[in-house]
Image (cartoon, rainbow, N blue to C red; front, side, top):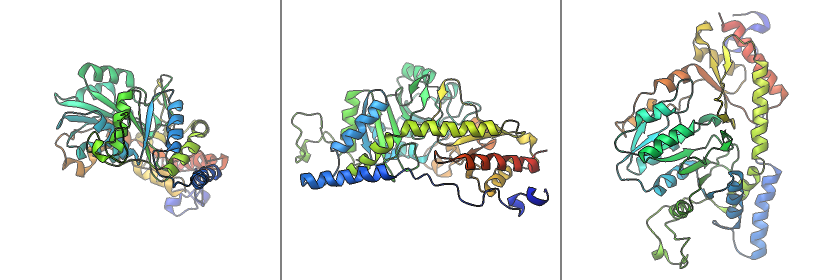
Length: 404
């Protein structure tokens, strides 16, 4: 342990940063004005605002414009979006669905809730994301679909995966919840699979409020099925559709819609999405530049096929250069006042509860190995020069004590 100012906070020394990181404050004056417009419009026309109205249309139209075409429906959450997307594919009962090796439970539980079988995959080496060979290895004779998560804003290598899926008749759902605006070979993620889902909860790159989601497809027939599945089976594309006649519904379905207020907020934050993406990339570049020459901490270099929309910033750690474990090293960084996740617990194969639901939980050594040698820096577009400098200073300080 160093003496004086070099004593780490985890050892009782002063923190590099003794105040919280700045809050994101995504919802500002523009969002307040958007909500006010919904109220004023409601008052002017004398009808209370609800759902499936002009604000959702405005929002989903803008989202499709951002995606360079297609069809979209706003739903109550990203998990609801995955649920609807799976139902829209009309999969064979009891068939297998491949899930990504590292994802949120919302990208897995809808499979279980629909009586389908979860089959876990592994990541490609040096990544959180599934790789083509790992994808192909996990396919069973009963595989009907796959949910492909673009984790942390980094794109999965979709071309070879789609070639494998198409050759086997496997439907693909892209989970873009952490990858709004990520480019894969110059095109937006969400445009490669049969259906795509975007969570729009408050921490995402663009958000509709506390919770929300978007289901996106380029197939018009699939879109109308999505619309019906998100709103009690209503036949919106039928010329004889009567909203007052529930007997006309196509089938039994849940009510998983998003409301007009949330859609107005989503339209507003979506207007700044590219600005948000660019700002986060700029912050990441500053941090990476400042950390050049570090002995143990290395930036995660995304693949040449990907222009990321960063949700968090992943750093690899040369554990052989450390005097302590990677987790101890990462916790020391956190103790200095820097927001990080020292040990990402979203490796699907490690969830004990999942093993109670399926017998197809395969080990994912590549994903586990990558996680064990990495930590995630949590940051937002609100970070400025002070935060960037504190991050660089902290990592340098911790390295000076904990590196051999």
